[in-house]
Amino acid sequence: MKLDLNNKNILITGAATGMGRASALEVSKHGANVILADINSEGLVEVSAKLKALGSNFRSVLMDVTSIDETEKKIFEAENYFDGGINTLVHFAGALEGSMVDIDDLAPETWDRIINLNLNGTYNVVRAVAKLMKKRESGVILLTSSGAGVHSPGSSPAYSASKGGTHGLTFHLQNYLSNHGIRIHDILPGSIRSPLKVRQLKEALQNTGDQKHFEKSSDELGEPDGVAKIVAFIISDDASYLKGSIITR
Ligand SMILES: NC(=O)c1ccc[n+]([C@@H]2O[C@H](COP(=O)([O-])OP(=O)(O)OC[C@H]3O[C@@H](n4cnc5c(N)ncnc54)[C@H](O)[C@@H]3O)[C@@H](O)[C@H]2O)c1
Image (cartoon, rainbow, N blue to C red; front, side, top):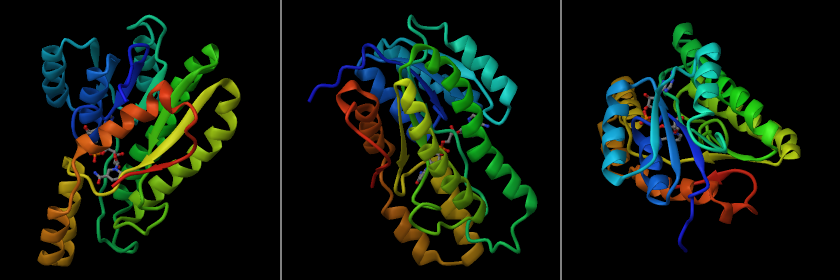
């Protein structure tokens, strides 16, 4: 099946590395206009160069999703980048800390940082995008939760809580925003090679000393490109009958 994303103006958060980066490259190949958003300026420059070489239509925005004001301001500006405004959100920005740390050893600052980025950051982004999509009574929103906190315990208390929270928020939005013609999903990627995942495996090794588990887990990682292909389909009009959460390798 050949995907046609020519009518898509897609805001991708966390677009500098990992699955956000891979998704930006994949959707561009199918004709989408892309707005890359991240706090990693070097990463944004690198992805921008790739997109330029592909001849893609894109804009790049430094945006910290933990700031509600900055997020709204930058998203409202980005609304004007492409004709028709932002009709698709792919929200990948996130982090994982506190892997294999017991709840009573977890620094409260770590808890706050991860909940603030993964859960409050999701709220900040969705809140701003929903204001725009509701006016048009259409759009697609793809959030990122995880097996951790949804169907498995995960390795970090804060991360699992943040992703369980994102999954719960997706249920709420499916009920509420679908009345405005907006299609909502969350994606639950498996273990995928990315800066986040590599850091998590190293932190777990440091905390457990389990070298065998580290090597096996590192060997078994999936690649961001595999998830990106699924993202491209989810946000396409061909997936208009799709409902609910999507689990990947
Ligand atoms: N890799 C996995 O195995 C895995 C599994 C399940 C879920 N996830 C989730 O997938 C998403 C993407 O992660 P990834 O694995 O591709 O990792 P990644 O580290 O490559 O991507 C995360 C991106 O978010 C950006 N970011 C961090 N803080 C930000 C902020 N305040 N504002 C804007 N951008 C910010 C980072 O700079 C980075 O580019 C995350 O939400 C992660 O929790 C990953």
